[in-house]
Image 1 (tube, rainbow, N blue to C red):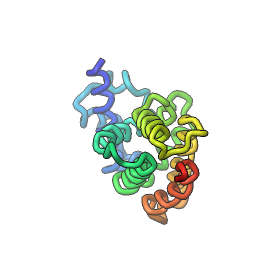
Image 2 (cartoon, rainbow, N blue to C red; image 1 turned 90 degrees about the horizontal axis):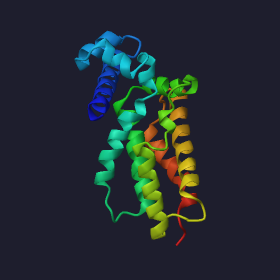
Image 3 (cartoon, rainbow, N blue to C red; image 1 turned 90 degrees about the vertical axis):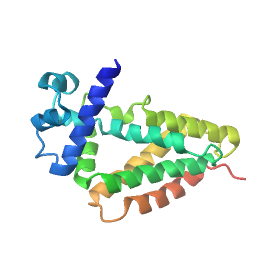
Length: 194
């Protein structure tokens, strides 16, 4: 089972690297196969097409969230942890991926009938959010009259909305600067008043 997961992630990472270097349209499945030193059979075992790779962008982000979760200061206020997660998300998207690729990824979720990994509640991203919010409610940093699920829904809607707007505006502003500023304003509603 672990080899299957590793092959899938290996293909995803190689594909995204090629998409960034060459562009999505210019990258072929054969180039992805060559970069991963796998076979066509292996590629098509995991993915129906190159387009399937777009809807799985969130797997790559989950790797980053897993690393980040290990680095978060356990004593940090849980509200501040949410802001660190915002900063990581927006900084990574703005600095590490092309606007065209992010826009394609988001649009692929609008039309894909098969993969909704972005919304999969079992993702590391959602588990991390649940942990931070539950901890914040227990420690009195985050209001507890809303369920963690309601807070996560609000958080993710705001985050995706800001990323979508940045794409629609063709990256004319800093996603990190504006996104973090807006998320802080938006999320102050979940902060427990002292």
